[in-house]
Image (cartoon, rainbow over the protein chains, first blue to last red):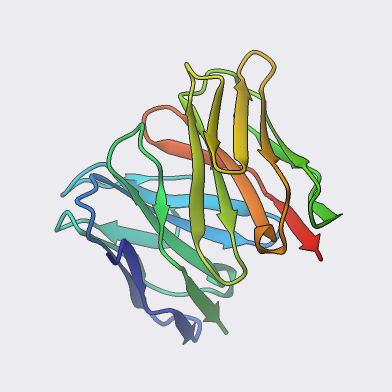
Length: 112
Length: 111
């Protein structure tokens, strides 16, 4: 039972490069989320989706884009990476708005 | 704006102690509150979810309470063990989709 799987686990980018982080869940969950976690800042919501084909902005959406073409996948894109985007990125999902949130193990991204 | 505060930021206790972690939120209009643990280098694991209509939830040695009127939740850990060492976070659900997280309490239980 895989749950929420994030790839890659680690990545180093140079300023200006682009990349896509993949989140996959096998629990048939409707809701999916992308968070970033920074020391002293806690978890902050970047973008989220309430179902296949939908996306919405969270607290800190600038510099990121997302897509939810398939229900089980939620992609986070960085078009032009900046050092301020150095962080640990977590994907999460849940069945419904009253259900517990399940997290992946995170992607550690460094932008130099 | 909803703010979620967890005090203390860090806690170190000997094995066997019963302990209480605190979570405060400024806006009592929440739908539910969830407690998580996070081990170093890992994602968050859900521990307990309390709906706004509930007062408490229990799972094994863990008990979480919710007092919406005072904007507080507590996580009680009975007979703490070294394996309980982790960071504990609370999150409140505001609106239909969004969770607001506290910054966590880092717990160390020593033998």
